[in-house]
Amino acid sequence: MARDKDRHTWREGYTTGSCAAGAAKVACLLLKGDSLAVQVEITLPNSARLTMPIHGGKAGYPEARASILKDGGDDADITHGLEIQAIARYISPQGEVHILGGQGVGTVTKKGLALSVGESAINPVPRSMILEAVREVFPKAELEIIIEVPDGETAALRTLNPRLGIKGGISILGTSGIVRPMSEEAFKTSILPELDQAVAYGHKTIVLTPGHYGYRVATERFMVPAEAVIQMSNFVGYLLEEAAYRGIKQVILLGHIGKLIKISGGIFHTHNRVADARMEILLAHAALAGVDVDTLKHLAEFPTTEGATKELLLIGEQKLLHYLAYLASERAQSFTYGSLSIGTIMTLLNGQPVGWDLEARKIVEEQGWVWSVEPKLEL
Image (cartoon, rainbow, N blue to C red; front, side):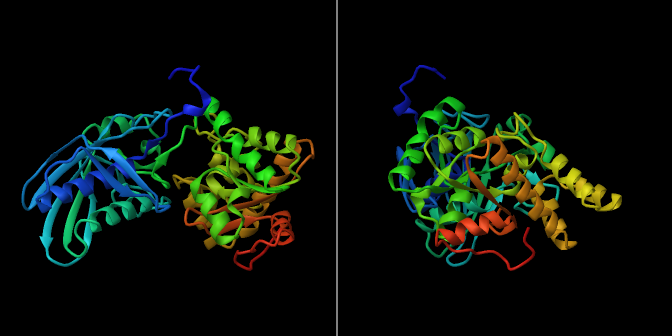
């Protein structure tokens, strides 16, 4: 990537989930008898429309196939350029849409992910996008949609999938449908206007969240004004420093425990290739809290903090999760030499808060936002 590119022209891309949805829609159009078009339009989770170029397609009945090339924009990753294919099979005039993974799409083999063991690694948001795209063509028919990635198995070896127990291919991912430039240089020049906007609106209190999930939880569950929510990606320390520099007084760190637990360990650049000590931090503090060795060994078997966190909730260890949130706030406050008051809310992938501190609740209530968590133990 050229490093001298004008900072205002970083090009966005689209996720594997968007590609799968687009390919599924094209396959359905071909199945219906339409000719192969040059591009296709789908609906994104935020109801915006995305147009993508079609790579290829083959008409037929009762089966048609289409493909779209993954485009990571100016933040190309391991999946950039992969061909994402969809096969649409007509079953009957009325019924469900069955979404399956085929060649090059991984299969979940371990607990603790957003999908059950044995399912194809097509995450919930992409599944919804595929369903909506199919229903734009066939509102009621029963169909089978198979997503394939011919080079997916090879590409997956360079992702986290093998460690997470996802075997045989890549995952079909994406929460917004769009890939924003999140390389460090691109991020630092593209995200600061959002922080400046928050200041211009008069906000001295903001929410920093890793990405789209946290943004939705903040705005929809806690009713935080959209302009006060900043998506910080992995650059926690940088955004905290920039917020303090701009006169922000209070910050809530809100997001999935798998990201924010790193802050509990004093990690302020959270990309997994920079620092990936999520389970180590969780297990260390679980041990310090007196969790027995057999339980620690059981927790260590989970491939993700999501699964381990759910297990901690089942055995009544929410106090530990609250402490981890409190610790994240303390480490973040020390990072900015006390120039910010910081609270933390840690969630599961479904947006359910599972760990928080009293400072987070105090800030939310002072701002007149909505404190929306289960009424359990707080720290």
